[in-house]
Length: 166
Image 1 (tube, rainbow, N blue to C red):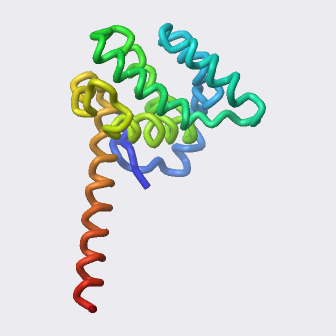
Image 2 (tube, one colour; image 1 turned 90 degrees about the vertical axis):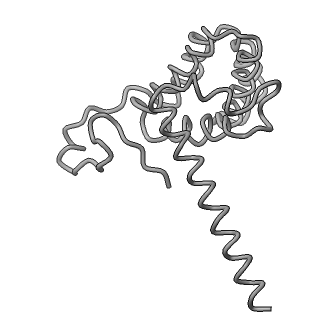
Image 3 (cartoon, rainbow, N blue to C red; image 1 turned 45 degrees about the horizontal axis):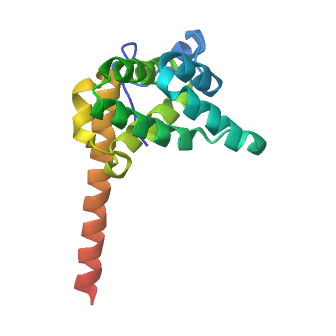
């Protein structure tokens, strides 16, 4: 899957010795809803509705919430509410940098990948969001786009190979 650099590793995987010394991440998926309520006041009602809709399921499907958050960010951008947009993106940046593996994956595959999807943007485009992305978010954004570009190229090559066999 994706490998993301942090300041500590500069793109190299941590050695087993370093992993043992590293402090456990302080942010987990359990921190998502409280942090969103705190950093995105206009998204609180959406968080409450999400919990109300999904509480019976047990483990909340936070990937669905990330799609809602992308739509919310698109609306903030359209409304020029840049301060709350920056607060949300700073939070996602923290999730990528300081979160445990599950939270980093949620931030990248849930939020960042969804943010590249034009279908989740109302009166904006994914490219409109790019200038506001903090460094780790931007790196994840670029890696997601490269991943999908490579997947499309592989699929095209496979299709052409099948056509030649006919």
